[in-house]
Image 1: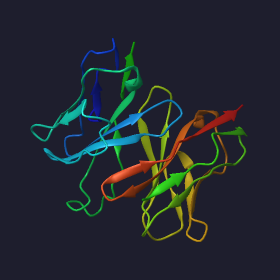
Image 2: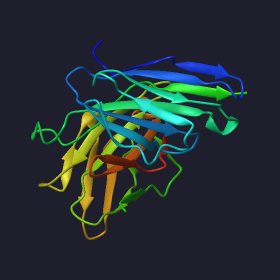
Image 3: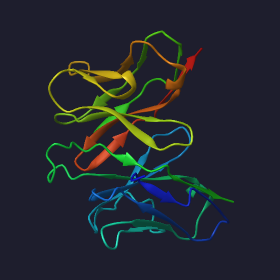
Image 4: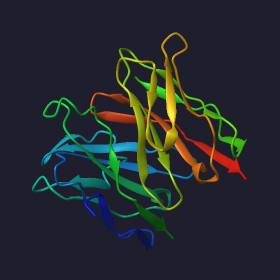
Length: 119
Length: 111
């Protein structure tokens, strides 16, 4: 399977602990996105990478959230000092770069998500 | 800022009947519009998109959507619903590199 994979699928943690999620995008894609989805809501944009460069991170919810994509391949999303309000599904998506591939118009390919429960 | 609205939290339809899931958008230029579907315990899947050209676009699983510029709408349609179409549907619009999603509409198809 060459789709987007995320790990772990489910994480239960106690308030105050740090958690890290990993995303492996489709290998040909150079764009990678993180979204957060809470119950009854659509995905909320968090951050975006083009290759290894993080081009937009203003939507990361607080300075407790950080994301990396060190070699332009997989990415990690870390949440420090978790709070109960961080409980959500964290989604990763990847896509082609429309500039590099003019036939592509930016549809996203999502992983199955990492569900975080903070007790 | 660009946005999409899905006015219905849930749509109920009988199997075999046509279905419509509504979406309206607000954009500052020409919109790139998308529909995605989310099945239980699965990631979001791309269904179809409108970029330019024909107002009626066809996508996966027999779905289609009609772009209406004057009404700023992009409703998702299917002529004959299946029970397996029951899922959560999201309308989305791109703003540069960012895709913005609506709150979602749950479609329930009854046998």
